Amino acid sequence: MPATHSETEKLSHAFEIKSGPVNLPLLKLLSTDVGAISAQLRQKIRQAPDFFRNAPMAIDVHSIAEAAGEIDFIALVRIMRDFGLTPVGLCGGHERHNQAAQVVGLSVLSLARHETPPPQAQPAETPKPKTPPEEMRSKIIEHPVRSGQRIYVAGGDLVVMSQVSAGAEIMADGNIHVYGTLRGRALAGVQGNLNCRIFCHDLQAELVSVGGHYKISENIDDSLRGVPVQIFLQDQSLIIKRL
Amino acid sequence: MARIIVVTSGKGGVGKTTTSAALAMGLALKGHRTAVIDFDVGLRNLDLIMGCERRVVYDFVNVINGEATLNQALIKDKRCDKLFILPASQTRDKESLTVEGVGKVLEDLSKDFEYIVCDSPAGIEKGATLAMYYADDAIVVTNPEVSSVRDSDRMLGILSSKSRRAELGDEPIKEYLLLTRYCPQRVKLGEMLSVEDVQDILSLHLLGVIPESKAVLTASNAGIPVILDDKSDAGQAFSDVVRRYLGEHVTHRFIELEKKGLFNRLFGG
Image 1 (cartoon, chains in turn brown, yellow):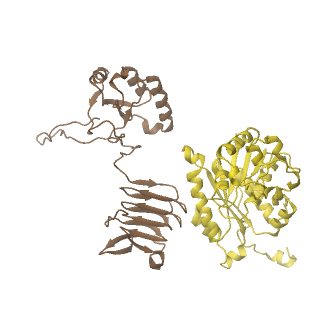
Image 2 (cartoon, each protein chain N blue to C red; image 1 turned 90 degrees about the horizontal axis):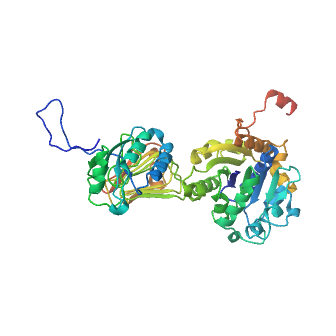
Image 3 (tube, rainbow over the protein chains, first blue to last red; image 1 turned 120 degrees about the horizontal axis):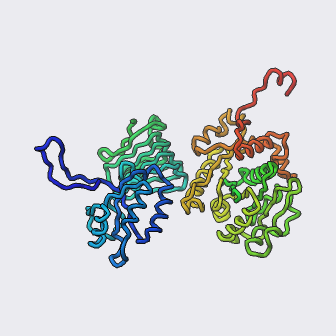
């Protein structure tokens, strides 16, 4: 449900009213054509029926210009319900939109963001998230990273669920996790963050580096090869420690 | 729609053309209309292995340039009427191939064929990337040695990032590993990587292991796809590969050293 605002009340025992962020998927309208919206929704929901079942969703009309004409909220809400969604509110609307939405029982929500233009930053994630918020820059790779491939995550962590082959290079401004065998190169904290770490399930790397301090394969102790380790900096030196 | 299969490896000399010829013949013998295309423009070889080099009039590049129709260029195999070969041009280079041209030929072939086997050239340049661009399935041919394995790994990276399926965000290309020139004796002596070693590095679905065999060279020189030599171990191994590709469950052979039983020892089995 939409975020509620109030002060924390300690006096009552039956409930408390608190302000808390709630992540809600947005149906960001780019058109006022309810038919087109319906067709696209059907397609989208077919791809992940379980994800959308009973999912609460807010309608975002930021991108709809005031002059674009009326939006048929009655039809839109009906279609969303028919698809098993629970429309809960409207955001980013002009006065006229807000009034029309309230008529069909949608609350008018205000988003904790300032401007319209930036990409759908803000909310996402219901209990079963699909589109993570964009501020979260970390990346999860589920397929093998093959020789010759390079992956760089700017401003976040990199998690590889599969192997990283010899001749592949993975880099992140944050930490690196590899849950398969790490045979390629892994560079954490490439922007100079010395607190980053590399975690890997099976170390056979060609090179590992944290914040620019690196070790090549030849200088990695044999006892640390093929075992789960973490790699971090301590007093300017790179420590590889068995997990 | 035809299923487009690319036979690729990165490294040269590992058995791509041998595999393409055997696979195409095997699919055709199973009753599927199959076309096999030689993408190695400038180094035409498939026609030799298929034994149709004396019947080449038009080639792949002629078709792309609109100088010949597909029907004029396709060579029907004499041994199996479901199999057709589209030879490469020997006088041009890989620059003659274009994404649109290749796409058009594959689209036209898709109308009449069930399987299209693309025999990729070595390397990761234009010929090889175009051979795999439209693929639905990829058979990565690898020899049990480190450089071949690394090149295959590189090719797999390209398959997963530069194919049409990758660009459109469709279901990725199905990748299969085919280990060729395998020699259990040398694996046992530690001179060659084992199936497990290769699987450990590539983690791919193993389509088959083709043993190192004299039959392959003999067959190539004679212009007969080795799969037709059903007495040879390599021929049988390729037959297994085709059956596995078509979804049959066939136990892997030729991986272990053959144990000579008492009976065999006595009678020289």
